[in-house]
Image (cartoon, rainbow, N blue to C red; front, top):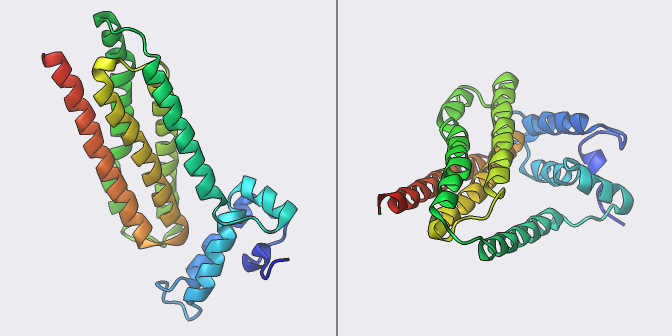
Length: 235
C-alpha cells in the first residue's frame, strides 16, 4: 500500500507516454515552483511533483513502479553507484592487462585515443558558457529551454562516443596518469550533464551551479591529462 499515486500527482493517466509525462511535469513545475511568481506556488507541492517524476520519468523505474507501486526512490542512485564500481573495476583490469609499452603502441594511443578524446571533450565543455548565457535571457521560455536540452543531448552523444574511444584499447602504463585524468574527467562530465538536465526539468538553480562546477572540474582534469601526455613526449 502507498499513500500517494504518482500518476495522480502529475495529473495523467497510467497509459500516458513518456513525452506526456515530461510535458505534464514541466507544466506543473511552472505552476507550483516557488520562484514562478504564480499564486499557486507551493514548496510542498513541488516536492511531491519532483518525487513523482523521479519514478515515472525513467521508463525502467516506471515499469517497476507499475508492477509493485512501491519502488524505492534510492533505487536509481544505488544502481548508478553499482555501475561506477563495476566501471572502475573494469578499468583497473584493463590497466593490469595492458600490453608491454612500445613507442609504436604509445604513438597509436596518442593518435587513436588522445586526439579524438580531447576533441570530443572540448566540444562538450567549451560550449557551456555560451549556452547558459543564451538560456539566461529567459529560463522559462520553452524555445530557449528546448535549445539548451538539445545541447545537452548532443553532449550525451559526444560523451558516449568519448567513452567508447577511451575503452577501445588498453592504456599505456607510461601514460597511466594521463589516462586516469581522462577517466575521472569523463565521470565529472557525466555527472555535470545529469545536474544540468535536472535543472531543465525542475529549474533548480543549485543543480545548474553544480553542473557548471562539475564541468569546471572536468576542464581541470582534461588539462592535467594534456600536461601528463605532453610531459612524456618532452622527455
